[in-house]
Image 1: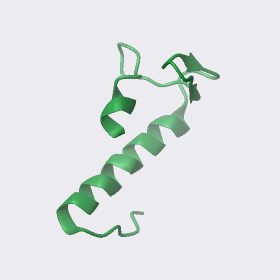
Image 2 (image 1 turned 180 degrees about the horizontal axis):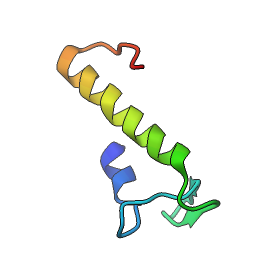
Image 3 (image 1 turned 180 degrees about the vertical axis):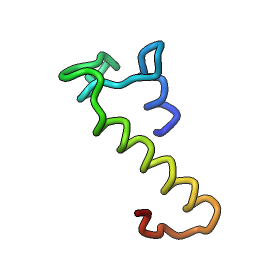
Length: 58
């Protein structure tokens, strides 16, 4: 799912507030919360793959 999400970025790697069903960017642009969520997800997924458990990431 993370790989699929990365395909929705614009050519500069930016995301809008929402992604539509067909990948269109909707809402405010660029949106920091979308980027922070993507980064947090990548960190947590990496930790899960390395250690097999999810830890709280501050």
